[in-house]
Length: 148
Image 1 (cartoon, rainbow, N blue to C red):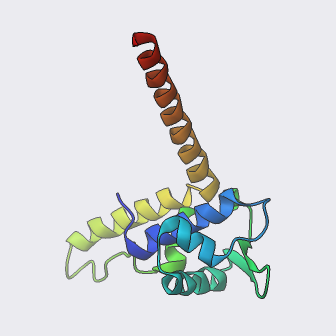
Image 2 (cartoon, rainbow, N blue to C red):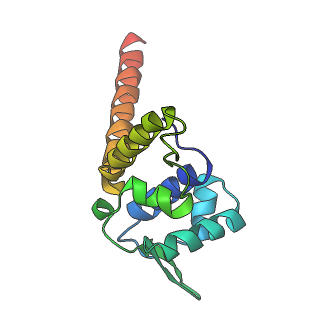
């Protein structure tokens, strides 16, 4: 599954804040630059994330955003639900349209799966993938030096 639109951008923005924890507040402008996303679009998303209690904002000079809770306590499902409550929606009227039973079970399973993955888990996986990529790059550089 690939997250689309608002859910994908919100998840990436939350990851950006989470990896910056400890370095102070992160501005929407910094996130917009990192993700190459419109500032006004991010402002709308952050209003929804703030309303859902996932981020805390500080106004004024030196202001910005931080996570409202530890990254291990925020699920990917919570982020998706905050910005796009219809992203993973079950169907209605199971009796009139029996295939909806299947879609309801699938939506329930997907919701459960995404609820079990924390923002911290996603960051750890991302760091592991980057670390492996760096290892592969350094190995290929070393082998090209040896070959020369």
